[in-house]
Image (cartoon, rainbow over all chains, first blue to last red):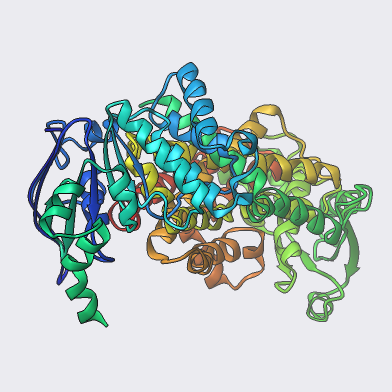
Length: 245
Length: 388
């Protein structure tokens, strides 16, 4: 197992964001983390990449404890944050190269990867424009490239296609499928059920910080006698949404 | 430490400096505009117009046994070109003119002045035989330039008149206050302001750093960098380097602009280099203050406001502005690092003091200590409370 989460609890003062989450992800697996807003998905990702310290429990990435060896973990992972975090005064290419350099990539490899990723996500023509002038979809794509330029073993993609138009979303899906072919381990959080169904080998549904369902999209559909993953999701989390309304 | 990471972050910051209009203004245009504005306002532009000061002289020794000494002093004062000498028969009339602002200073030559000079030359090495006396100098406290400029000029003329080329450190029978190494030749008000102006420009780094960190934090960029294997040491080193480069550009621009408007300090390359080094060390102090500001501030807007907590005292108490303030405010100036930067630069650029002068070395030591403390405190506070 490349990711092992054991009884993870993360509290912020009186709020328990993650409540006893246990999960294992295999090497080369594309794992979907689903849940309503505030369910604890992003908190889990933040603990996995060493940004947040767990309150209790343990989290390891390829055998490295994220608490004890965060640098080792950071060398292995690529993280695409939910909110686009890009330097608007740099060009697309400069943003990508900066993050390649922060991962201490050799110059030649960095150049090759940058060109390849910009081409795959259709940003090559705009690569020398400042990101401040990019559209929202272009910013999201450059955000994704910045996370993956160093060719990480594991990718944590936090809602990478949110607010993208249909064409851009499908381009990103193709790109993520490409990662799967390269045997990369991917953790994907998303609100789009068709995205999870299309891409993920397995999904975990979390709510109130707890894992409430786990399995392949097919297994979950069969178990809940649903036509698609969206119906499964509504059955599982609809109570909360109704309560909130 | 991985220098690929450090240099890529420095490169990013330098691009920000050039490409972001607000940063470009604060770091590059602001010092340029400031220097040109002060040069135009305080008589440096053109370079040929020099400020003159009206000095009233009351010579109580004109009827004494050795009147030639006081006459020689008055003649030398008249020849400085920067001083316009007006003779007064008594102190009361001179003081009345000083109060009314007709003159900026009154020099009272005591009746035993000639005797004192004579006693010194009869036994230059035996101070027990000297007739000690004091030349009284009254200054217009409302004129910041008079209070700053006149005493060193008088001291220099007095030294040249009475002692000729005697070493400055030996004891003297005649005193007018603290000795100085000023070369008072065609100095303008701008010459007295320039050292403070160099410190003034660097002070605003506090705001640049605070805004930059607060903005990057708000946009999630610091978190994003934190997810990479970049260490805090590498990140902070890059910040120190890029801000020192910014300070170097600022000081170079201020020097260049000052030179353009006629500022010509008569010093060598070593003194120039030391002046740059002092400002660079001071820039680290402001990086520290910027980090402390960014830690406290919750948003870039708040960072701009809070930065003035550090900027205002340094600006008013520690630069050229300080000399016009009350004695208590001037005493308070000793608690801000910019005071020591201005003091060191004034000694170097205005008084032409050697780099080994104790005043400069002490100032350098104080600025260095302040910078190390501010920077470390800033780093520790930001790492602990400011990243989130």
